Image (tube, rainbow over all chains, first blue to last red; front, side, top):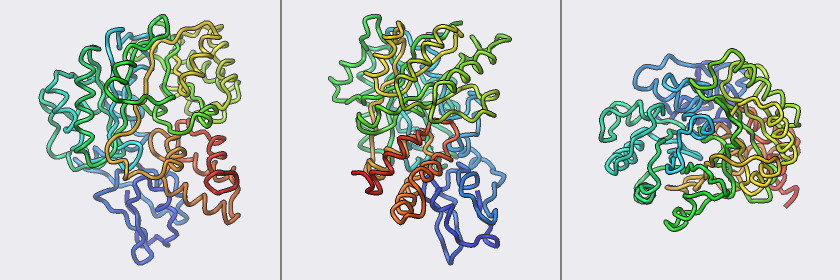
Length: 233
Length: 197
């Protein structure tokens, strides 16, 4: 994004709407901090700029990577899904992707606010790889990995995005190891992240992972996403 | 996407906040001639059950997911009952309070298949805005609603320059998925602006 200085009248509407708070008035002209802008396009779409001063720019590599991880109407080429993740559990009643003995994890870095640089992905992926985790093939984050050790492309590490989701599944007996990695990284990361855990629900209504989560000191929020089993092939 | 998973708030507030998401599985049940028609039918059913927000109509035909937001679990139950009767085979995911959804699902005779639990937020939480602001901003799961826009509209409400309803409508604009709950936003804005404590 860029704001045309010769058009801007300094009304500040774009400052209010920016989700990462990187627009400032300098000499009564709105200026975007280009290092911190995540290219989400929210200012262009929603600020109602009275002089149409907010413009899209043709982004070059590596900056172009910011848009699909930030702009909600930008579709990732890999997944074909608008947004930052995969189908995950949403179609599990059809795909059975998460079996009864498996646990899925979704770790979203930069949520619920502030964003992240892509280098933070590596904090997780290198440690998770070392305990034998394989990442969801169709996740946009997986497309950034360059080796089997969880490293990402060097030239994108400083690129800032609204959020990036690391998605994977493990056998239930490996879930404790994943939880320990999450606890370790929490101490070292420079932003926030959210964690989601996916499990099939047993016929008697029990959720196999619940006791393990509590045993490891995690608390579970009272709201969740529930697939009610209406999907059919 | 985990976009409706990490909505924050107190249990009482969350009792009026449910999202239904419908989706076909890529390469499995999205490939039939009538697949798209079935997804469109789900959109119609959801729209008939008084959602307070729904993915904009022009997007129904092109979006691979249909989303709608409800404030009343009874409406969610009604929608589920119609979906059961019509047996469209589209995957349905409901976001909201686990206890309320499980009860509703049980009453319709279904069993929950898979659950996505939220363990909440980790890391540098001191960088986040207040919990009251987050209750509004997390209603857009892609973080398109900025914390300072909430503060801005609260000040406008306090000074009588905008109604609570209009402020909620303005805040919902950046959320293109139809999962921002403007009715819940009304309640939260009322609290934030001191109209109701």
